[in-house]
Length: 229
Image (cartoon, rainbow, N blue to C red):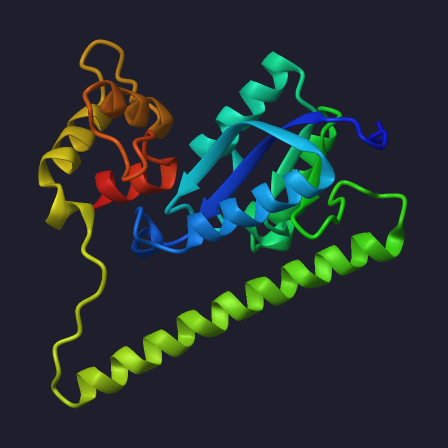
């Protein structure tokens, strides 16, 4: 439904930061996204009533494994809000396929997804807009891949000189007690022979006080890395 001039419409905001190194109050990514979205909301007449944030979640992670996005869908279905604001399409996902699936999941719930530059990401009547959105997503994914390769090459050059190269420490190094508990929860039940799902393990860890840096349950991909380490 189109927004009438002067009308204040309630909306939710969605943020995503792909790297754990960019998570925290002293980091720029979440703050930049929030400032861009709030500025657009004020200009366009939207009232942000809730925010959802997936911290340290890769842009290629599927939407069903994202706790923040899942909570966003639950909130939409529960309170009738039909507008989601994001900084740009890459915050939904850098992978074009995942990006389109996220948009389709929201569009199926009669939700509009608006970027901070005013683009309606759910607009499908304009073929050029759809094509440009997909092209932008492809370039965002390409740029991320190029950056990863560039950093990997830099690390290899340092190793070749004998320098010690430290990557991001794993949970096994920084939080061994969490990994140990995740592996315990993954064991088969002696009664049923069944295993808990990765999501069930994440929820149980959260109940025990083991959460991500943002205070939310771990994503399924993080739990998988724990139990397979």
